[in-house]
Image (cartoon, rainbow, N blue to C red; front, side, top):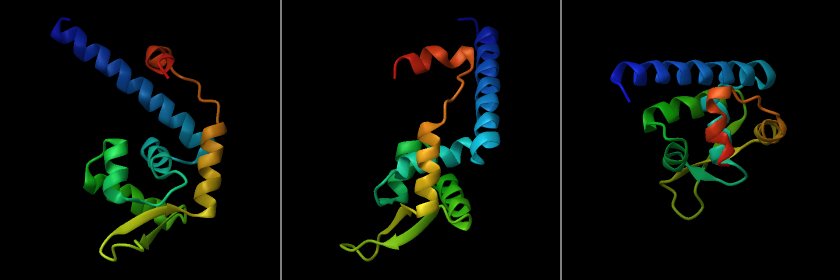
Length: 120
């Protein structure tokens, strides 16, 4: 693929992702990174490093997202029962409700992203 065309396709993908994120913000009050973080934590207690790995975010960015979710009472930090040095993230009741709403939300996928979602 020609370099300029590649950049133009990436621009269209980023624009579609932005459109998707805006829909999620409007409907659920979550950014795309916040939604991915809730999904990465899920119904279990996990370390921040696991959340970063599952979302593909850098640890520092993931920490900021977790802190924002914590301020909104959607996530809480707990000391690991087996390793007191380890801090794990768990969804609060409100976080669990938001995750369930996210799972039930009918996402309208922008056309350019549809082939990606067809594989799942």
